[in-house]
Amino acid sequence: MAKQSKTTNAATELEAAVLGVVWRDGPCTRYAIRQDFRESRAPRWSGSAGAIYPLVQRLELRGLVRSKSTVRGKRPQRDYRITPRGRSVFERWLRAPFGPAEAALLHDPLRTWVLFLDALPLDEARSLVSGAIEVLGQEVLRSKEDFREHANDKSPLSRLAARNALLLSQARIRWLVEVKEALQP
Image (cartoon, rainbow, N blue to C red):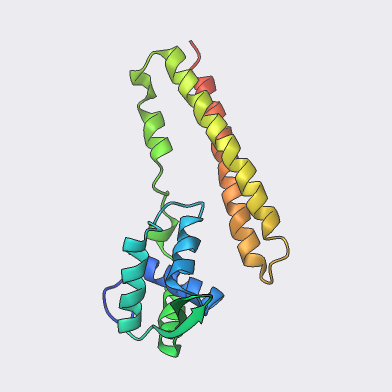
């Protein structure tokens, strides 16, 4: 079963990710949390204000984060910190058993797309796969840059997470080359 619950003593994956950002970067504003999600290489969750701001507000109502009004420049803002209770909920989520649901194949629109390429003329399918390889090539370049940017991080884990994105992109390119070869006349 996936790591999520609606009780106040447990966190959904998204709630835990927000708590993690506040733990790692705190004190931070809702805007900074939102930017972290918007800049993420994985578009699993929306980085929109309409998604993040109400979530942070709910976390505060549950006592998992607390805010303090501050002024930076001319603008007032609220800085959020994780509370001891929030840290406990976050750590409970981290410690939850890693099971088959978490290890399952990722949502992968590319894999689904490939399943149905036979519906197109062979030359067109090969051309589309070439285009996908180009897009992933750009992703590899961005992932390499992310990896370099994390070279001096205090914790090696952010660098390893960036390396995961790089390795996955490279593996997807190798797989698409196999797909393209399978589309031979």
